[in-house]
Image 1 (cartoon, rainbow, N blue to C red):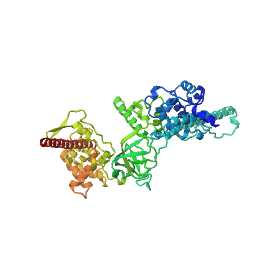
Image 2 (tube, rainbow, N blue to C red):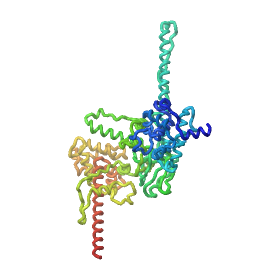
Image 3 (tube, rainbow, N blue to C red):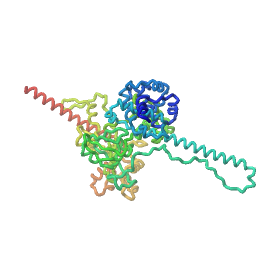
Image 4 (cartoon, one colour):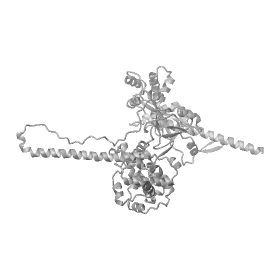
Length: 584
């Protein structure tokens, strides 16, 4: 093209009629370049409604898909009446700049076989318009992953192509089967003249690559140092005493906390973020480094879709249990693939930037998310109760929220609601915790109270009673894996019950004595007291009712100690102020 033509293309949009635009907008899955070009043109020409632009902060795939489905009559009029001297809205220019200036929208890099000349012309005009009015610096600071949005749009188009190809293949196979059947019918009357042969017709569709299950961006775990670990090696999440800030779609992770704790993370380590059990596995692409802030990078951009899908499933199950408690056998949770959950977020009829209820469609910014490092299970020496706490599955209940409850020490009253908010679980090292933590008091719960609660918990098993029979005792031993290190464990457990029971029942005193006997057999190398302590802390505390009681008691002890400390600080501060005033 001549210099004059190129100059005209940079200042004037192409003369697109409604028919020209309809050939793209009428497609089920238009090309990514057409979606971006038409969407950005509508925004720059103010050809969309105020419901889209009022609260628009950045472009996402659902917003682009919604814009391209709007009526095109207004866009055609705006193109024909465009004035090059009219300046576009700077806010809109800032939003569309990273899309228009992306390498995929460069007309010289476009494939003429896939993108029409009109789209190339439109892209040239868009790039000329935003380059005249945009500032490159603020465009670079945007957190939108434009490459990921282009990839998602391409994935939609590819799925449509594969679906169409599969449909054509099925039609071809069906036509072949019909033709074969017709030929058989024509020659059926001459069938007795032909020798019998086995004929088979392929009626199944050709197996095409399945694209519903999107490939995970993670690699197989490589182990602690990223070398030599077996794919079948069982890894468990181990908490790192820091929190992280990150944005969905970005590999950059900012670290909050001390450098010493972050130094446990190394390049090629496998980590989980936000949720220890539901998160995907993410591989570190670099060691944590301190520039202005402490940070590291992942091998690929962070994806929060699996956790969002699991949260949606949990809400669905909870609503079913609340609304239909009498239809338990009919409640079936719909199981969706990762691709189906992602497609659920692509609904173009929902506006993400202006609808707070649909804010999860926009790039998610996580602040203060916890992080776990995957280590071999044989290297993990924690007890089960500590694993549950570190994984974040022990709930924190705000029991005093909104209540007028107080603690009084040293003639100073303090609100338990305020103390409860201060003592919430901290992900940072315990030695650096400002307020008391319940984890510090879990092992300080009176030992005899734990055994007493275990006895009452077993008694509440069906059928409820005040004593423990042989059936409940056997069930308890199976769950706690008592004497699992012995060969004839069932016989020893039955004989222990016979020795300590009265009329084949165990009361509280006999329950204490039988646990002493079991602990001594399970840990013969320890003293009687130490063996019982080890047995209780390795198994008994994992009983649901016992565990809940211990965490409740540990929390109460933490609040009590924090109340005493706060009241003492207040009394000392008041005494110092009094001394200062008297000295004046």
